[in-house]
Image 1 (cartoon, rainbow, N blue to C red):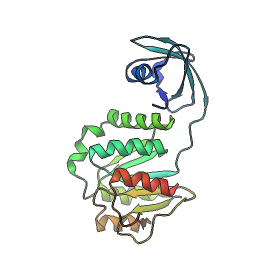
Image 2: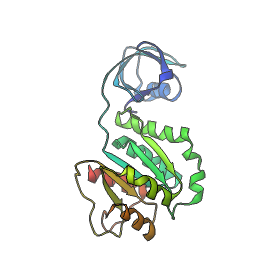
Image 3: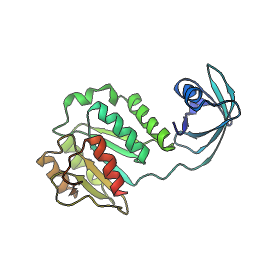
Image 4: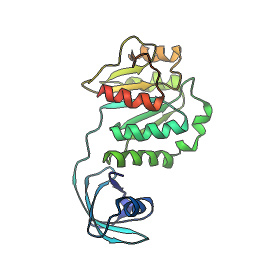
Length: 235
């Protein structure tokens, strides 16, 4: 945990917080912090700063906090991601949140198993947990926006045109000849398919909206590997 993310309910007064549970245990067992020590903190969707421990026991941790720093800049990208299997989804959400993605659309595709949409991993509190872990890793506080779209064609035809406006729309598609560009300037909308990729119909529908099909090369990567690789190359 590189940052202790603070929630509104943690604040007991002006500049003072009280922590319980996972974060308090982490400070005790990992940081092994003591009264008087200072830790990096940040208020969810707010400023970063420091927290000085003023009380610490087995039940709770109290800090006096100073929040006076802006969070790191976001990546100028909207990620359209075909819903991966639940274990992969956890990894991807943590990774892209840590990298600074602030808008993620989890969408359907022909190769997405129907059972994935019923997974408890998609419950709002479960998704939020993975996003918080990503924020803690990256010392960030700005929670990404998550959108769920279980109908591919209506989403692509009705909503995608507005999403890609004033961005460069890129489709990660292994059969593509054009290599994924590097160090792109400006905003990007990146569409990434499921394991096995988008079927031809889906790729053609996205390309009809203006997406450029690009590839990472001959090697086929898992989704949790491909998405960070694409983001690292683009930005």
